[in-house]
Image (cartoon, rainbow, N blue to C red; front, side, top):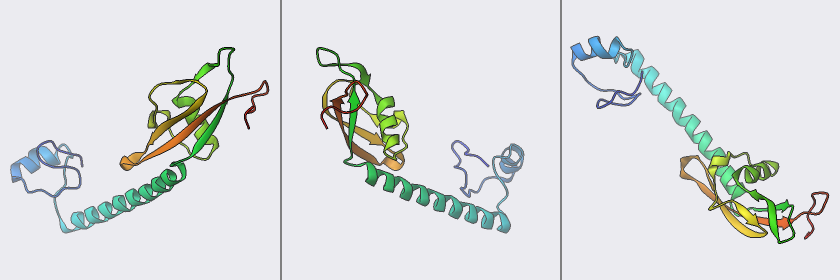
Length: 151
């Protein structure tokens, strides 16, 4: 079963002419006849999908609560003029978040532009179901061993 343009989405129960159903929908396996057993199976499938969506939503809500307001201290090597040797971008932020227990993809991080200097910056994390979290990035100078100087 699949979505059918201008007719309905998967899991919808629609009434169509007998010829259209037999010659088009059933042959292409876009729909099934609405027997009592099929309707019961459809309801069970809908309940299963709803339960999965609810569990996924609660997991994402916990992740958002954990991430919202988080401060990430990112030590970076700095040149003579105070500029970073490499910019802090979504890939670096995702790696730092992963170290802190938040597994997120780089395309879920909204950053105005790559960070090329020391200081404090903010970034937005975009999650499924339209949920967002705001994090604070603190870019500090690292010593020769890669540890923070300012701590």
